[in-house]
Image (cartoon, rainbow, N blue to C red; front, top):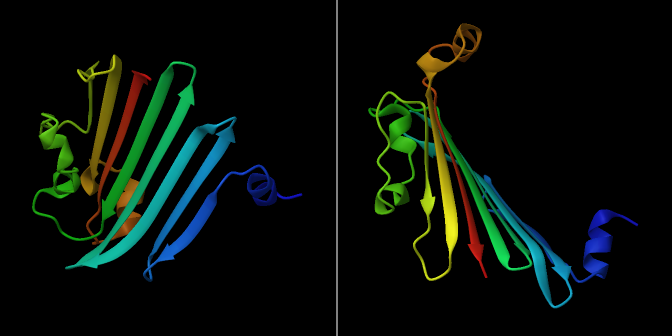
Length: 161
């Protein structure tokens, strides 16, 4: 019996759908008694932009165990277009709403602290920004004259439920 068959048989929902021509979304729920213990979503999309293409990958994993819940988000965005602000232009806007201001010239930055919500919790966010000039020389040569920018964000939140 295949893994998808087992998931369907045990009541887990697994959804895969194609979004437009260049996008894909997946989701899965792994049940335990009355509610899912693990929920996972993945979205991947590619879209043209002036002078290149932008590729974005987003994932969200939620795990509930005992009195704790872990949420983990990963977002990777890359562009082959010439961007005035380089990889900084790819930083998710919502970080500013959280009070996070990435510092220029620092390719890897991390923030951490209490969540400050109704439930006790802790959050950690890591941001990586890479532009073509930070890549190894062999990779820069392989890319040729094309620009390259990449931003990756990882956020983890642990809260009481």
